[in-house]
Length: 111
Image (tube, rainbow, N blue to C red):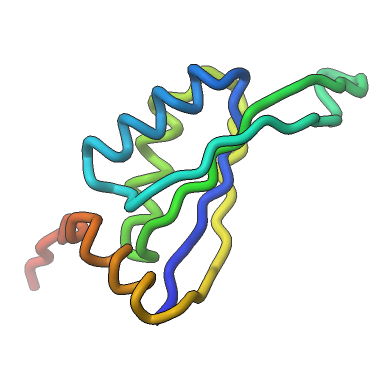
């Protein structure tokens, strides 16, 4: 079956909390882990190093585009990191993820 993990970096814990709560309220994710990290990266011609926060959210493959779109709309960064990772887990956990999120919106096409 499988599901996806989405790795998202944030400027601070409150940003991560706000976005996670937004995604949970829309039933786009089943759960999230939020933790501090140290990041080093290129930005505007120089190397930056600072503390950030990560949210690691779990959802179905079918909801990837909707989650990405919502994070892009809510995120304060000019270039947010929204990284999709394929995952598998024990059957009971995967079933719980599927039962915890809403069904993806379907678009109707006409011939």
